[in-house]
Amino acid sequence: MSSTTDQSLLATEIAEDEEALYRALLLQATQEMQGRVSGAWEPQSKQIRPQPGFCLKTRTSHDDKVFINICRSEYIPAPPELSEQGLVSLLESEDPSGYRVPMSLGEPHAEVDNSGNGCTAYDITINSAFFEKIQTNKLFLEFLVTVAQEGLENKYSLELSREWRVLKNRKFMGSVTDQNIRTKSRPIIQEMDRSEVPKPSSMTQASEPPSPPDVPEYRILAEPAEGHPSFLVAEIALPKVPSVRSLVLDLGEDHIVLWARPSLYHLDIYLPYNVIQEESGAQFQRNSKVLTLTMPVQPL
Image (cartoon, rainbow, N blue to C red):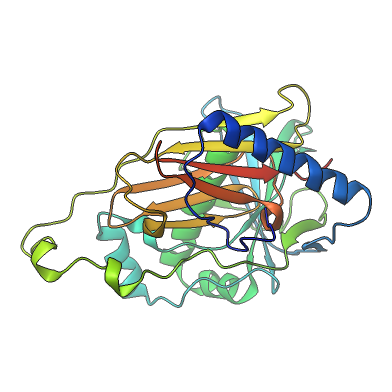
Protein backbone atom coordinates (compact mmCIF):
# COMPACT_ATOMS: atom_id res chain seq x y z
CA MET A 1 0.00 0.00 0.00
CA SER A 2 1.80 3.11 -1.20
CA SER A 3 1.95 6.48 0.56
CA THR A 4 3.46 9.89 -0.03
CA THR A 5 6.24 9.27 2.47
CA ASP A 6 7.34 5.75 1.57
CA GLN A 7 7.16 4.05 -1.80
CA SER A 8 8.91 0.79 -0.83
CA LEU A 9 7.06 -2.44 -0.12
CA LEU A 10 8.90 -2.80 3.15
CA ALA A 11 8.16 0.41 4.99
CA THR A 12 10.37 1.90 7.68
CA GLU A 13 10.29 0.64 11.22
CA ILE A 14 7.80 2.28 13.54
CA ALA A 15 7.50 2.33 17.29
CA GLU A 16 3.73 2.73 17.60
CA ASP A 17 1.75 0.25 19.61
CA GLU A 18 0.03 -2.55 17.73
CA GLU A 19 -3.54 -1.34 18.24
CA ALA A 20 -2.86 2.14 16.87
CA LEU A 21 -0.98 0.73 13.89
CA TYR A 22 -3.72 -1.76 13.14
CA ARG A 23 -6.35 0.98 13.14
CA ALA A 24 -4.22 3.13 10.84
CA LEU A 25 -3.74 0.27 8.41
CA LEU A 26 -7.46 -0.46 8.32
CA LEU A 27 -8.22 3.20 7.67
CA GLN A 28 -5.66 3.41 4.88
CA ALA A 29 -6.97 0.23 3.27
CA THR A 30 -10.53 1.53 3.44
CA GLN A 31 -9.54 4.82 1.80
CA GLU A 32 -7.79 3.03 -1.05
CA MET A 33 -10.76 0.72 -1.54
CA GLN A 34 -12.98 3.81 -1.84
CA GLY A 35 -10.51 5.29 -4.33
CA ARG A 36 -10.83 2.22 -6.53
CA VAL A 37 -14.62 2.42 -6.44
CA SER A 38 -14.57 6.12 -7.40
CA GLY A 39 -12.37 5.41 -10.41
CA ALA A 40 -9.10 6.76 -9.02
CA TRP A 41 -7.50 3.32 -9.05
CA GLU A 42 -5.70 2.11 -12.16
CA PRO A 43 -5.52 -1.66 -12.56
CA GLN A 44 -2.04 -3.14 -12.23
CA SER A 45 -2.98 -6.51 -13.71
CA LYS A 46 -4.34 -7.78 -16.97
CA GLN A 47 -6.15 -10.78 -18.32
CA ILE A 48 -4.36 -13.33 -20.43
CA ARG A 49 -5.63 -16.32 -22.36
CA PRO A 50 -3.29 -19.25 -21.60
CA GLN A 51 -2.48 -21.76 -24.33
CA PRO A 52 -3.28 -25.41 -23.57
CA GLY A 53 -0.25 -27.63 -22.97
CA PHE A 54 -1.01 -31.01 -21.44
CA CYS A 55 -3.28 -32.47 -18.80
CA LEU A 56 -2.32 -34.52 -15.73
CA LYS A 57 -4.58 -36.97 -13.95
CA THR A 58 -4.19 -37.67 -10.24
CA ARG A 59 -6.34 -38.12 -7.11
CA THR A 60 -6.79 -36.58 -3.69
CA SER A 61 -6.26 -38.39 -0.40
CA HIS A 62 -10.04 -39.03 -0.42
CA ASP A 63 -9.70 -40.75 -3.82
CA ASP A 64 -11.43 -37.91 -5.68
CA LYS A 65 -10.31 -37.56 -9.28
CA VAL A 66 -8.33 -34.40 -10.08
CA PHE A 67 -7.05 -33.05 -13.39
CA ILE A 68 -4.27 -30.47 -13.62
CA ASN A 69 -4.08 -28.47 -16.84
CA ILE A 70 -0.49 -27.33 -17.44
CA CYS A 71 -0.80 -24.27 -19.69
CA ARG A 72 1.73 -21.87 -21.18
CA SER A 73 1.93 -18.13 -21.78
CA GLU A 74 4.67 -15.73 -22.81
CA TYR A 75 3.34 -13.26 -20.22
CA ILE A 76 4.42 -15.45 -17.30
CA PRO A 77 8.08 -14.75 -16.33
CA ALA A 78 10.61 -17.50 -16.98
CA PRO A 79 12.45 -19.02 -14.01
CA PRO A 80 16.21 -18.46 -13.73
CA GLU A 81 18.25 -20.53 -16.18
CA LEU A 82 19.33 -23.80 -14.60
CA SER A 83 21.09 -26.86 -16.02
CA GLU A 84 19.98 -30.40 -15.32
CA GLN A 85 23.05 -30.93 -13.12
CA GLY A 86 22.23 -27.70 -11.31
CA LEU A 87 18.72 -28.98 -10.63
CA VAL A 88 20.11 -32.29 -9.34
CA SER A 89 22.43 -30.42 -6.96
CA LEU A 90 19.55 -28.22 -5.85
CA LEU A 91 17.28 -31.18 -5.10
CA GLU A 92 20.06 -32.81 -3.09
CA SER A 93 20.62 -29.65 -1.04
CA GLU A 94 18.99 -28.93 2.33
CA ASP A 95 17.01 -25.99 0.95
CA PRO A 96 15.70 -26.65 -2.59
CA SER A 97 13.20 -23.79 -2.17
CA GLY A 98 15.85 -21.37 -3.45
CA TYR A 99 14.75 -22.04 -7.04
CA ARG A 100 11.24 -20.83 -7.81
CA VAL A 101 9.16 -21.39 -10.93
CA PRO A 102 6.76 -18.47 -11.59
CA MET A 103 3.27 -19.78 -12.24
CA SER A 104 -0.34 -18.67 -12.14
CA LEU A 105 -2.70 -20.94 -10.18
CA GLY A 106 -6.26 -20.76 -11.48
CA GLU A 107 -9.45 -21.36 -9.56
CA PRO A 108 -10.86 -24.91 -9.43
CA HIS A 109 -13.64 -25.72 -11.88
CA ALA A 110 -16.03 -28.67 -11.90
CA GLU A 111 -15.91 -30.94 -14.94
CA VAL A 112 -17.22 -34.30 -16.13
CA ASP A 113 -14.77 -37.03 -17.13
CA ASN A 114 -15.14 -39.54 -19.98
CA SER A 115 -17.09 -41.88 -17.72
CA GLY A 116 -19.68 -39.22 -16.94
CA ASN A 117 -18.47 -38.77 -13.38
CA GLY A 118 -17.83 -35.42 -11.73
CA CYS A 119 -14.27 -34.27 -11.14
CA THR A 120 -12.29 -31.13 -10.39
CA ALA A 121 -9.77 -29.43 -12.69
CA TYR A 122 -7.12 -26.81 -11.94
CA ASP A 123 -5.32 -24.62 -14.47
CA ILE A 124 -1.64 -23.80 -13.94
CA THR A 125 0.12 -21.47 -16.36
CA ILE A 126 3.91 -21.31 -16.76
CA ASN A 127 6.28 -19.51 -19.11
CA SER A 128 6.17 -20.75 -22.72
CA ALA A 129 9.95 -21.25 -23.00
CA PHE A 130 10.05 -23.18 -19.72
CA PHE A 131 7.13 -25.26 -20.98
CA GLU A 132 9.22 -26.30 -23.99
CA LYS A 133 12.05 -27.25 -21.64
CA ILE A 134 9.93 -29.61 -19.53
CA GLN A 135 8.62 -31.21 -22.72
CA THR A 136 12.10 -32.53 -23.51
CA ASN A 137 13.49 -33.06 -20.01
CA LYS A 138 11.82 -35.58 -17.70
CA LEU A 139 13.63 -34.34 -14.59
CA PHE A 140 12.37 -30.77 -15.06
CA LEU A 141 8.89 -32.13 -15.81
CA GLU A 142 8.79 -34.09 -12.56
CA PHE A 143 10.13 -31.07 -10.68
CA LEU A 144 7.46 -28.80 -12.20
CA VAL A 145 4.66 -31.24 -11.34
CA THR A 146 5.90 -31.49 -7.74
CA VAL A 147 6.02 -27.70 -7.38
CA ALA A 148 2.58 -27.35 -9.00
CA GLN A 149 1.03 -29.96 -6.70
CA GLU A 150 2.54 -28.32 -3.62
CA GLY A 151 1.19 -24.96 -4.77
CA LEU A 152 -2.33 -26.35 -5.17
CA GLU A 153 -2.12 -28.14 -1.82
CA ASN A 154 -1.04 -24.98 0.00
CA LYS A 155 -3.57 -22.72 -1.68
CA TYR A 156 -6.62 -24.98 -1.58
CA SER A 157 -5.84 -27.19 1.46
CA LEU A 158 -5.59 -30.34 -0.63
CA GLU A 159 -3.61 -33.53 -0.28
CA LEU A 160 -2.73 -34.89 -3.71
CA SER A 161 -1.32 -38.26 -4.61
CA ARG A 162 2.21 -38.21 -6.02
CA GLU A 163 1.06 -40.84 -8.51
CA TRP A 164 0.10 -39.04 -11.71
CA ARG A 165 0.08 -39.54 -15.45
CA VAL A 166 -0.09 -37.35 -18.52
CA LEU A 167 -3.18 -37.90 -20.66
CA LYS A 168 -2.24 -38.86 -24.21
CA ASN A 169 -5.33 -37.70 -26.07
CA ARG A 170 -6.34 -34.63 -24.10
CA LYS A 171 -4.46 -31.35 -23.74
CA PHE A 172 -7.01 -29.68 -21.48
CA MET A 173 -9.86 -30.73 -19.22
CA GLY A 174 -12.77 -28.33 -19.60
CA SER A 175 -12.50 -25.05 -21.49
CA VAL A 176 -9.72 -22.47 -21.45
CA THR A 177 -10.56 -19.33 -19.47
CA ASP A 178 -8.74 -16.05 -18.93
CA GLN A 179 -6.45 -15.54 -15.95
CA ASN A 180 -5.44 -12.31 -14.18
CA ILE A 181 -1.72 -11.73 -13.84
CA ARG A 182 0.31 -8.87 -12.41
CA THR A 183 1.60 -6.42 -15.02
CA LYS A 184 3.81 -4.23 -12.80
CA SER A 185 6.18 -5.15 -10.03
CA ARG A 186 7.69 -3.04 -7.30
CA PRO A 187 11.07 -3.24 -5.58
CA ILE A 188 10.97 -5.97 -2.94
CA ILE A 189 14.64 -6.19 -1.92
CA GLN A 190 16.19 -3.45 0.16
CA GLU A 191 19.92 -3.07 -0.17
CA MET A 192 21.93 -3.35 3.05
CA ASP A 193 24.34 -0.54 3.89
CA ARG A 194 27.94 -1.65 4.15
CA SER A 195 27.95 -0.46 7.75
CA GLU A 196 25.28 -3.06 8.51
CA VAL A 197 27.28 -6.01 7.17
CA PRO A 198 28.89 -7.97 10.04
CA LYS A 199 32.66 -7.87 10.26
CA PRO A 200 34.52 -11.11 9.47
CA SER A 201 35.37 -11.62 13.14
CA SER A 202 31.66 -11.81 14.04
CA MET A 203 30.63 -14.07 11.17
CA THR A 204 30.07 -17.80 11.50
CA GLN A 205 33.18 -19.72 10.56
CA ALA A 206 33.07 -21.56 7.24
CA SER A 207 33.59 -24.89 8.99
CA GLU A 208 30.33 -24.49 10.91
CA PRO A 209 27.27 -25.41 8.82
CA PRO A 210 24.53 -22.76 9.04
CA SER A 211 21.39 -23.77 10.88
CA PRO A 212 18.20 -23.89 8.80
CA PRO A 213 15.87 -20.88 9.15
CA ASP A 214 12.86 -21.09 11.46
CA VAL A 215 9.27 -20.82 10.28
CA PRO A 216 7.87 -17.78 12.12
CA GLU A 217 4.52 -17.71 13.88
CA TYR A 218 1.87 -15.79 11.96
CA ARG A 219 -1.84 -15.15 11.67
CA ILE A 220 -4.02 -13.84 8.84
CA LEU A 221 -7.08 -11.71 9.60
CA ALA A 222 -9.89 -10.96 7.15
CA GLU A 223 -11.95 -7.76 7.19
CA PRO A 224 -14.85 -8.21 7.24
CA ALA A 225 -14.66 -11.66 8.80
CA GLU A 226 -17.83 -12.88 7.04
CA GLY A 227 -18.27 -13.15 3.29
CA HIS A 228 -15.77 -11.91 0.72
CA PRO A 229 -13.28 -9.69 2.59
CA SER A 230 -12.17 -6.24 1.48
CA PHE A 231 -8.61 -6.89 2.61
CA LEU A 232 -6.37 -9.25 4.55
CA VAL A 233 -3.97 -8.37 7.35
CA ALA A 234 -1.07 -10.75 8.04
CA GLU A 235 0.88 -10.44 11.29
CA ILE A 236 4.23 -12.27 11.37
CA ALA A 237 6.24 -12.52 14.60
CA LEU A 238 9.99 -12.07 14.02
CA PRO A 239 11.54 -11.80 17.51
CA LYS A 240 15.10 -12.49 16.29
CA VAL A 241 15.10 -9.83 13.55
CA PRO A 242 17.23 -6.81 14.53
CA SER A 243 16.20 -4.49 11.70
CA VAL A 244 13.90 -4.17 8.70
CA ARG A 245 17.00 -4.30 6.52
CA SER A 246 17.25 -8.00 7.30
CA LEU A 247 13.93 -8.72 5.56
CA VAL A 248 13.32 -9.75 1.97
CA LEU A 249 9.62 -9.85 1.08
CA ASP A 250 8.03 -11.18 -2.09
CA LEU A 251 4.26 -10.70 -2.23
CA GLY A 252 2.43 -12.36 -5.10
CA GLU A 253 -1.21 -12.35 -6.08
CA ASP A 254 -1.92 -15.24 -3.70
CA HIS A 255 1.47 -15.98 -2.18
CA ILE A 256 3.76 -14.63 0.54
CA VAL A 257 7.47 -15.47 0.62
CA LEU A 258 9.56 -13.92 3.38
CA TRP A 259 13.23 -14.32 4.21
CA ALA A 260 14.94 -12.89 7.29
CA ARG A 261 18.68 -12.82 6.81
CA PRO A 262 21.01 -14.38 7.68
CA SER A 263 19.01 -17.64 7.81
CA LEU A 264 16.81 -16.46 10.67
CA TYR A 265 13.34 -17.12 9.25
CA HIS A 266 11.71 -18.38 6.07
CA LEU A 267 7.96 -18.24 5.42
CA ASP A 268 6.31 -19.52 2.23
CA ILE A 269 2.50 -19.58 2.34
CA TYR A 270 -0.48 -19.19 0.03
CA LEU A 271 -3.31 -16.77 0.79
CA PRO A 272 -6.99 -17.74 0.89
CA TYR A 273 -7.88 -14.89 -1.52
CA ASN A 274 -6.17 -13.10 -4.40
CA VAL A 275 -4.83 -9.71 -3.34
CA ILE A 276 -3.71 -6.54 -5.14
CA GLN A 277 0.07 -6.55 -4.72
CA GLU A 278 0.65 -2.98 -5.89
CA GLU A 279 -1.65 -1.53 -3.20
CA SER A 280 -0.34 -3.77 -0.42
CA GLY A 281 2.13 -2.61 2.17
CA ALA A 282 4.20 -3.90 5.06
CA GLN A 283 5.48 -2.26 8.21
CA PHE A 284 7.93 -3.69 10.72
CA GLN A 285 7.39 -2.71 14.36
CA ARG A 286 10.76 -2.25 16.02
CA ASN A 287 9.45 -2.72 19.57
CA SER A 288 7.23 -5.77 19.15
CA LYS A 289 9.26 -7.30 16.26
CA VAL A 290 6.07 -7.92 14.28
CA LEU A 291 5.81 -7.50 10.50
CA THR A 292 2.30 -6.42 9.48
CA LEU A 293 1.12 -6.82 5.89
CA THR A 294 -2.05 -5.09 4.71
CA MET A 295 -3.39 -6.50 1.44
CA PRO A 296 -6.52 -5.30 -0.40
CA VAL A 297 -8.43 -8.29 -1.77
CA GLN A 298 -9.36 -8.41 -5.43
CA PRO A 299 -13.13 -7.91 -5.78
CA LEU A 300 -15.38 -10.68 -7.04
